Each structure stands twice: as C-alpha cells, then as structure tokens.
Amino acid sequence: MSVRPEGAIVGSVAGGELPPDDVVVTALRAGDEAMFAALLDTWSGGMLRVARSYVSTDHSAEEVVQDTWLAVIGGIDAFESRSSVKTWIYRILVNTAKKRGVRESRTLPWSSFEQDRAAGRDLDGVPWKAFAEAWPTPESEALASEVRGLIAEGLARLPPRQRTVITLRDVEGCTSEEVCEILEISAANQRVLLHRARTAVRGWLADYFESVKQPE
Amino acid sequence: MKRFTCDELAEHLTAYLEDALDRPARDGVRAHLACCEGCERYFEQFRVTIGALGDPPPEKLPADVRARLLSAFRERRRL
Image (cartoon, rainbow over all chains, first blue to last red; front, side, top):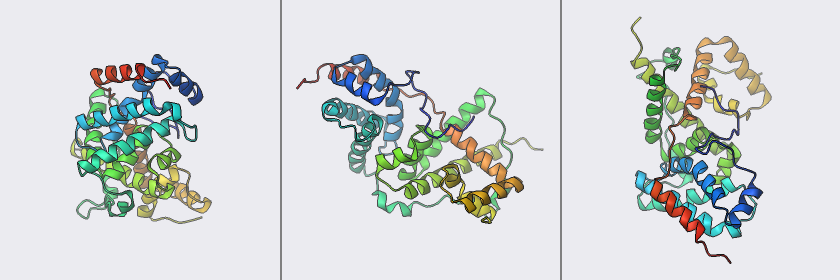
C-alpha cells in the first residue's frame, strides 16, 4: 500500500477519469445522459461515505446522496464555474447532510471542534514507542480485508468532524484546498482535524497488529 | 534547524506531509527521522494508515436510486 500523491484522482467505479469541468457542464446542460451516468458512478460511492459522517444509517446516507443529485440536476443551468464541479457537488452534499444530521442530532457546529478530544498515544501509561512495532506487510488478501474492516469501524468511532475531514482527504483523495472550500474551514483547522483522525486510526491499527502478533 | 522530541515529532507529521512546515521545522523533522528508529517506524505506520484509508471497499448507489436519478435527469424541465 502506498500513499497516493497529493491531489490524485481516486479510482472510480467507472474506471476512467472524467473530462474537464467545462466539458462535463456543457454535456449536462445538453442533457447528455451518459455523462450524468458517468458522474453518478464516479462520485456516488465517495458521497455515500462522506454522508455517513453526518447521518446514522445507510438509508439516510442514500437519501442525502439522492437529494444532492436532484439539486445538481436542478442547479446545473445556474452553475457558475467559480468552483470546480466536484467542490460544488460536495458542498451541496455537506449542506444536505448537515440539515438531515441536525434532525438526527448527530452534528455539532464546526466552531466547537476544539472539543474533539485528541486521541492519546499512551496506552495505560506505556510509552507509545513500545507499540511502534514493525507491522506485517499486508500481502495476503485476508489481512488487507481485515484492515479494511478495521478502518471502517475506526472511522465510525471518530468524532464527526474528524471523520468528515479524513474521509474527504484520505479516503476520497480531495486536496486540502478542496476540503477547506467544501467545509468552509481554515487550512490550520483542517490539518488539526485530519491529524487527530489519522493518529487515532493508526493507533487502532497498531492495537490490532499488537493483538494478533505471533508470540516470539 | 528545529529540534523535536519524539512526541513533538509525531504531532508534526501531517503538517510535514502537507508541506506546511517552515524550513527549520522541516529540516528538524527530517533530521529526527533519520536518526530515530522508533519515529521512523511510527512515520511509516502513519503512511501505511493513510494508504489503507485510500483503499476502501467499493460502494454503489442502490440500483433503484440510480434509475430514479437517471429518469429525473431525463425529465428535467428545459428552460
């Protein structure tokens, strides 16, 4: 597993990359169904994952994504290229998810992010370095799928704002600029949330590898 | 060049990866990583974690939702 370069386009269901924004917008306005389908298939998976950081059920997440796409269909004629299509769609998604999340009382205002507790690196007073053991290389598919499951569980345990940021950045491959624009937060704020989330997820993976370690 | 304790180093890793550190801090991170095996390993795990996050199981919209959206697109009112 390697770290994606900054700003990499995430592999999509459709496989291919989407054409430039102006081509996409022109096609959508002209009623090009294949283009709309490509967009749906490329972004809906990521949108579902981001929606889940705001709402509590799969069904709610699906409704948020559906309502977002309906708003995109209704708003494409009025879209002004002040932001990228992706950022525009994700902003609609986040606003839609927030409204719904408030109803489900799942979200807090971003300004209260300081209350997110930083994940500690100590485990019962044991210095963390004792746990920076070498990890097994996830060569086997079994281990890789185990890790995927752990990560999904870990994301669900994160404070909501941390979860949103790490999902956009590390799962979906958005740049920090895109995330700041989508969530309307500062670069420093974004970085703090991302770092806490990454630290927590690393910690959970470390605990897991520690627990399955073969005795020497 | 800035000097970091191991704990301080760990707190700077995201900023380091984002290229958001000033030069003395960046050099300090590099120097520390070069001579501290524990932190080097921690950093490696941090990067493995980021890599693993970027490899989620595929997700799709349910077929009925997708079909509904495609027909909504077809039927949108032209102005």
